[in-house]
Image (cartoon, rainbow, N blue to C red; front, side, top):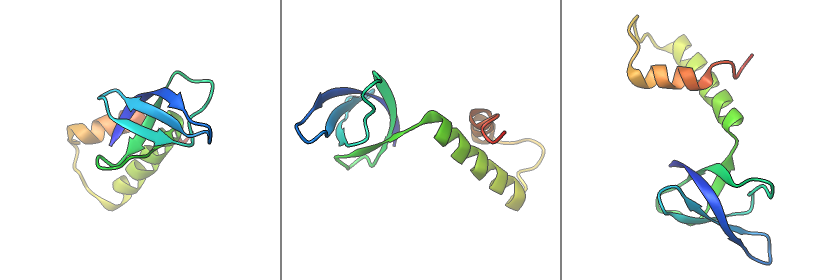
Length: 94
């Protein structure tokens, strides 16, 4: 899953408790100290999450779109999901 999150608390070991935009409580060791909210990725059944930088995610999407374009023929009319991903990735590899 992918969601926005805010930090709630930090324990003595530096682990941050976060709450996602949909009320899921998770823990992470990667929370930047100078940010109010972050993009996080997590398993729906998990207790921990990873912080994902939007620019890094955009680069990953751009690489996936590039590979998809090389190995697949989606035709002239691309599906909506392809168009959304393509827009998310614009400029990420330039």
